[in-house]
Image (cartoon, rainbow, N blue to C red):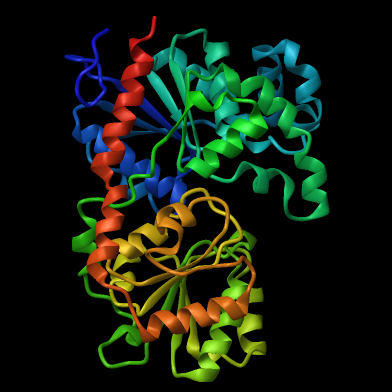
Length: 415
């Protein structure tokens, strides 16, 4: 089949399913929905298939896309369905799936995903997570359809599998053989950064040549308009002390305790305020730490905010304090808003985004002193907003969509 300039088969509308775990307010959901909207605008039939079709983004589906809410079944039925899809994989499934230690709730949606594929037969299903990829590959086998599976890896697989508590390490080490057996069935692979691609290749045994790096479509056409929208937070009114901003789920990965300790050092030197946008299970412990550091009065955690870009456009510096990432979309979006940035040099993505520190300081993970110094450095000598916006343009929705269409077109052009 001939392939057009943007990579899609000439004269043919593609039927594309994007498979998500939920419509929660995370970065994966935001970037996948952005991609869905951009593909729909290019004239393709787009279905957003969600396990848990609830969350802040349910009412913000892009125009021209259809939501498919999968029905939840019994966990036992899901386990048996996975075994039927790959009877020879029982030894690899034994602990992570059949026990199960890791892949559990996602399996409840496996039978209904297989029914969806058999009924609607999309040309391709794009997965938005490692375990969702397993479910999609098993569902295709159960349905017996020719739907192509495009696996997108969005995080650092090594950190996800091996770092954290001892209990987590013990559980997740059993996943790797399952990934090495099942993931190669996919028709194509996309990673959100070169570091993520290298990691996926090394751990899952996927030839590096099969993995295409496509940056997330995080800089959308409407971002500039949203950045200029009114923001109700009083700390961002003109004439106030400089505001340090962070955005992300309140979870261990984002390492907000290091940010709080760094901000305490900044606050000891000058008047400033810290706003952390996001929600998560570490809210109470972060609030307690702010209190213990004596900075509670200068720290605000408003929770999830639908339009963080208005905050980014008015903050003095944006800080990414993560222990690991895939491609930090919020870092890029802050740059697109002209906001100076500081980031940890965590794997993977920040060094790629900032070109080794050319567009903002990179500091060691967990080093509050280095982070505080970098924040004060940027407050004293902020970079040119124009150069930040220019770099952020490399992560535009149009560029990402063109790249995805090339990959999808190549998949569908194969026999």
